[in-house]
Length: 412
Image (tube, rainbow, N blue to C red):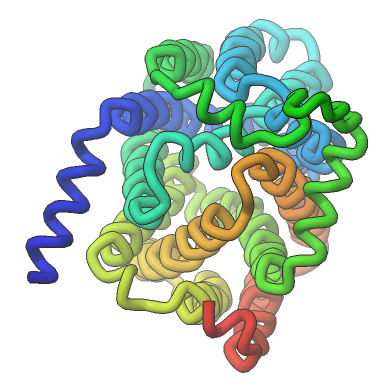
């Protein structure tokens, strides 16, 4: 009987054209992003040979979340979310297309384009998380998040591997052109999605019903942040998310330097990221099959603890094949943790607050991510990679171990 019910749920989700459009558009767009995320740091590394400069361009992708994340959440709850996301796609496509031309004249210009591209992304990512519950019902959210995450990390396997090929055989301009084109595909598929505007408007307060005055933009942002702070489970969930992104952020430049310094091959960085993506696919599919039988809190804490161990092991394994196996396990644990975190947030936040809550969380988590990237990049100039990977592991492992004994975390 359980198997039949599971198949019915899968068939129901697979038959939703809106979800299929969202899935296909993001799959193509994220393929381009993977290529660009290898091209950006290599472009800076080839120009400067500086670990800090390379980390800076990675951090610039997250700084706008700190500056504009809460504002973006308010905009997404105040305006049409899909329209904002389409505008963000168009802006990102144009900016990425300009990178090779600007790089010929100024590395500072490349930094500026990275920053502006991320500014547009600030309005896209929270919008995607807030839009999903409008496309699939609550009982299918875990499965939908798992499928989206598996799809995203399939693009890591394919995109990062393709990036290594492109960097070695074709002009770097090709990587950025591909990414720009995929943003166009994302915009088209978003526009093809049909939403019940009347139903969504009725669920949003402050839209003029009963003659009530519409709250100010500042009040709306404050309401979202207040909900995040007051909700005990959401607050604890956010603390664990911050611990996760601190470790992941610090590990990103360290992984790049592990490939550049120890294995001396730019394609190896792509292979390492692809291994994490492969693991994420495995973790996503595992959670899709059995996630309803596992508490989200338990999945979050155990996933983080496994990630911590994997980070600590990475620099001491010695050979690329062993590092790749370690990163596959890391990716699987990351999937179990992150999908559980996202599904919990989507299930407890009211529809009219989703954009603001996700915007506030992105502000916090991406700010911490940026600090982790910059700190690791700077310290890597004077400290060996082994201790730095070890610190990443501790940052992720210890909060999860504590959370395992906290009921509001463990029992969700």
